[in-house]
Structure formats: C-alpha cells, structure tokens
Length: 416
Ligand SMILES: *Cc1c(COP(=O)(O)O)cnc(C)c1O
Image (cartoon, rainbow, N blue to C red):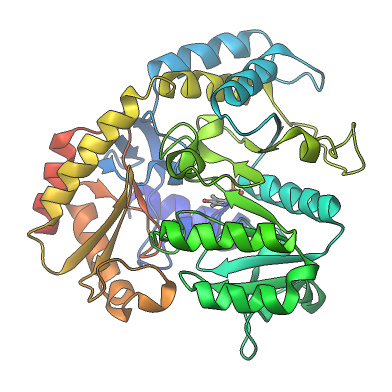
C-alpha cells in the first residue's frame, strides 16, 4: 500500500469522498488521489516521494510557480506582524491601489475569500443596480457553487433552466436563464423574450472550466451590445483569466469592457482571495456606502493580501506574460505532430481534446465523447512519466513562470 492509499483510506472515514473539493477525488480518472507533500517551482512531490512536473498548478493561482521566493519572503514577513485583525489595514489598500491604477476601466474593488463569493456578490450587485432578478448564464461556463449559478439548461424553450445540484431549489432556477455558448441567435432570442427582466449576463469570456472553449470576439461583442440595449449589466467572470491572459485579463486584451468583473485564483497568489470590481456608480451601492450587503470575517486577510500583492507586482511589467506565451508556442509546436490530440490554447491556459473536426471547439456539444473516454489512460500514462495533469478531461492545464521548455519537451515525449 502506498502512503497516498493509506491516507486516502483514513480521509474517507472523516470527509465525504475523502476530499474537500470533488475533482481532487480522481473519480474521473480512477485510482487513488495522490497526497501531495510539497511543491516547488513547476514540481510536486507526493507523500511517497515521487516527483511530478505539475501542469495543474492548483487549478490556476500559481502563475509564478510553487514556492516563489519573493512571495514566500513577503508572506513570512507579514506573518511576523500577525495574521488577522478584522480591521482596516494597509496591505489591502495597496493591493486595491495597484489593481485600480492598472486596470483602467474599474474604479473600486472589494476583496472576498473565493471566486464563488465574488460571483455571488457581483450578481447581488447587478440585481440591486438594475432592480431586476433574472441572470443569464451560459452552458459550459463555471462560476463557482452559489445556488444561482448551479443551474443548467432545461429542455424546451430557449433559456429555461433547472438545478444542477441537489439542494438547489427549483425556484432559484426560475431566475436563471441558460444560453448556449457561441450562438448569437440564441442570445438574441432570449433577450427578445426576457430583456426587461434580465439584471445581468455572466460569462467566462474565455470559458476554461469545461475544456477550453474560446469564444469569438464577435459573439462577445454581440452579448455586450444586447446587454446595453436591454439595460442589463455584463459580468465577466475572470476568476481564471484575470491577471493571466494579461494583467487586465480578457477585458484588457479584447477591449470589451464588462460592467462588473470578478477575480479569484491569481489575485490571492495561492491564498484564499476573490474580488469584484466595477465603476464607482455601481460599486457605491455596496455596504457600508450603499444598500447591497456584503461582508466577511476574513475578507482582505493581510497574509492573503500580501501574497496577492507580491504576485501581482511581479506580473505588472508583462515580462512573465511574454515568457508564458513563448512556452505556449513551444507547446503548440510540440503538439502539432500528435494527430490523436487537439490542443486548444489561450496564453498559458491549455486543454487537450481528442482529434476534432472543428478548427476550434467553442461549445460543450462540439466536444467528442472520445475526449472523456480516452482521458483516464492518458492521465495514468502521464503520471507514470512523471507528469501531473488536472485529474479531469474537462479541466484546463496551466503554464507558470516556473515552467521551461524542458518541461514541454517532457510532456511531448510522454504524449507521442
Ligand atoms: C475557479 C472559478 C470560480 C470559483 O472560484 P472558487 O475560488 O473556487 O470559489 C468561479 N469562476 C471561474 C471562472 C472559475 O474558474
């Protein structure tokens, strides 16, 4: 029995499924989840002493790699000063100043503890701002686990929806509309029918939680103009893409400005942080200035803020994004001759699907069944070759500043 197997046995006795977040259980790949003992640079070491090149990178926060020495030094220094005050303090101010100074179209930002909380609060804010209840989301996007977002497309009329988790009331589904990705006609139909009731449309501008499903700029522009025309707000959920596709995320690289943006993952440098931001006239509705309640005992925790601040400062000059794009292009080259797989990539986000007839897969119904069927074998072969991928066919891979071309070559050899 390996140490991981032994620990997983113990964990299952005291935790549902042995894990604290479902994808960690390896259900989609089979076998026992690895228990990780430590991580450094682009590498994980499990409790049995095996080392892996990590292309999961904690599902996104670790853009600098694991154990970045500058972040580590800053965090250590912060801990020396105490780690939770429940009071105003300087680090969150500096992080807010850094972000608002460098993301041109937002005025103010509120820090919370997770991407889920950021989305939950953004939706509440959009509803308060418009005086409307309905929210339009897209099939194939993930926005965390708030009730209003655990809703999927129903059968029947365009836009209808039903709970995607037990415990979410049917009544919540009545205020959520679900549209297909990459389908401008469908969203026009939904806005024609419900335009006056829609508080906001929320989308991952580069959907990266059900494979990587890049949308065309034309589609996102159509969505933005439908929102404007009908008085709905546009929310970009950039929890994964924010500070990754560029400092200002997709909104900056595309020039398409949402009304509200949500962030998470990188913004906390690997500690629990989320945030939502918008222009002043919207954000001024948030308590204590306005009537939209939002609070948190651990909001803007100084240690987490320090990790975020140290991480974002490293990203500001753009050098790391250049390195990540160079690595991404090396990955393109490496994958080109491997016929059985299709690589989809935006910057340092990538995803491997089985060979596809589509030039670009843009919606869940274009993903072949073979992609999920073939994944477990590929995942195990990669583990055997010392490479750790996210343990699901629908999670994307991440490149970090700590990766180099030798890691890409190692991946290429393992997949060939
Ligand atoms: C990860 C993610 C979330 C949820 O963030 P948590 O911190 O896991 O709650 C929400 N939206 C998107 C786009 C994400 O990638």
